[in-house]
Amino acid sequence: MKTLYVEGDTFLHRLSPRTKLLGLAVVSLVLFLIHSPAILSVAAALGGIVYASLRLGWRQSWLRLRPILLTIVVVALFTLVFNGWHDALIVVTRLTALAVFAAAVTATTSTGDFIDEITRLAMPLERLGLVRAADIGLSIGLVIRFVPEILGRYQAIRDAHRARGLKVRPLTLAVPLIILTLKNADEIAAAIDARGVRAQK
Amino acid sequence: MTTRDLVLAALFAAIIVALGLVPPIMLGFIPVPITAQSLGVMLAGVILGARRGGFAVLLVLLLVAIGLPVLSGGRGGLATFASPTAGYLVGWFFAAVVTGYCSERFVDRSQAGIVQITGFFLAALLGGVVVDHALGIFYLAYITGTGLATAFIGDLSFVPGDVLKAMIAALAGRAVMVGYPLLPHRA
Image (tube, rainbow over all chains, first blue to last red):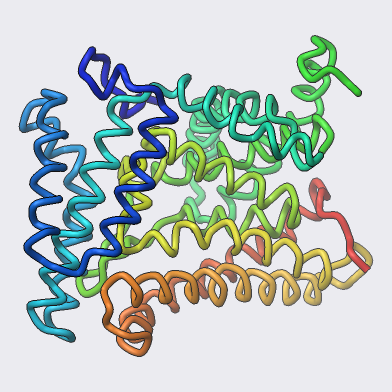
């Protein structure tokens, strides 16, 4: 799995993940308080400048932003039909600004930095006894570790269907995939406990 | 949460991510792609129950937030939460919890097969369709200012697909319960 993080040494890369996340939260709040299309357009342009300063190149930037921009355009058309051009303009500028700022934070913060930050943010929850902060990083690591294995299993089940001349249906595929995968849980949990990764209290 | 619960949730999150690699179908008139991932969300509730199922979906959302392209079509990153359809995405968590809670209430291992399937279907319908769509509609209506009625009409085209997914989730949930029961029962 490739992350959306891009190596680099721009100003945004050097900012701490916490500053970036807080900044993004403030920006999104402000964007929702503004109702003037002109100011929102300036905000979107600013976002564009910040994003351009990452020097990802046109092609790469387009590939990354395409899915969300398409969604925004369709929703804007929807708003145009029902509410008129003024509201549609607000939707386009506000959401585009939000999307580029968010994409800029994603492109400049590595997965590891994010996990560290989330672990630190979860500390107060740990003190309340709700979660163990260290479990979050462990779980994320587990998910990333097992996706390729599940895909391999998916292909094996599909091939088994073909070999027996059966049609591949969602049910006959999902059920063995889920049971085979979840049956590993005991061994994996035993391995984690045997290594003392989660020190028992 | 025991280590086993944690691992089960993480494995299920990985299954949901893997389901996203099946290409999504875009309907022309509303900007929400139909994906097997929302089937995975219902399955998480039906198979693991409220607590572990909710945690599995939360992990997927966390992976999205930290910039991994784990959603169908390679979508991911914080920008996904800025999308007008983010209500459906955040709604996944509540969908899994509600589906899980209802499954724990409605379904019991001693029941007849048809009763279990019906219970799972109702649970998936409540969580995966009612709760998720309600949150999606509220957010879409709020962000576009079009009003709830318009957003609701736009949403309707996705209901048949998701009802079908609830049916698949019910049948799969019952089959997994027979083969490898994990769902806790809530009296």
